[in-house]
Length: 48
Image 1: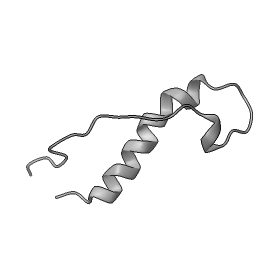
Image 2: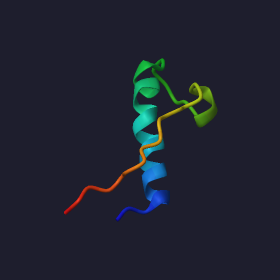
Image 3: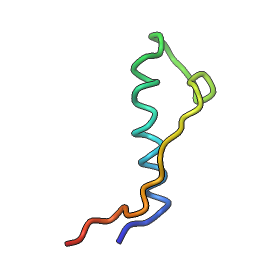
């Protein structure tokens, strides 16, 4: 079973990787990067 809040936080971080890598060098804030989007996954937990 997964915690939706933790999954949402992790998804936001993972989806930010391409924009972060493409950004110019230097210190950037959240609003300096483009809006981040992702796809919702209906089943986030794996059977054990």
